[in-house]
Image (cartoon, rainbow, N blue to C red; front, side, top):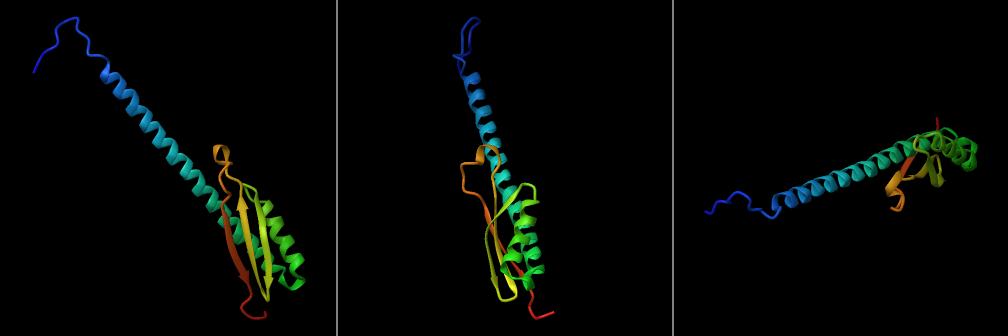
Amino acid sequence: MSRRRAGERDGGFASVFMVGAIALVLALGLLLLLLAQVRAARTAAAGAADLAALAAAAEVFHGERAACEAAERVAAAQRPTADVERCTLDGLAVEVTVSVNLPGALRGLPQPEVRAKAGYATLP
């Protein structure tokens, strides 16, 4: 093993290594933050879809138009605002597909879409 003498330089390897390690840790942290935002948006879409389907099911006896309008009102009231992509009435059941916009830097990615179904098993 050789020892450095006073006045010799080590070439800055440790500094360069630490800068690279810190950059890697920050990049991984940012990636985890972005993935958490996608997960939160999907969870919000699932909640909005469930609520919209239940609202639509409450209006199922007034026809498809009334049911889907109820679903759209409920979805628009959610935070983040959800959009009803599809709404179909099948007998006494309503199937609703809802999407939400991704926040910030994730806006270029496809919006998460979630389907929910609600209705009556038998006539009340």
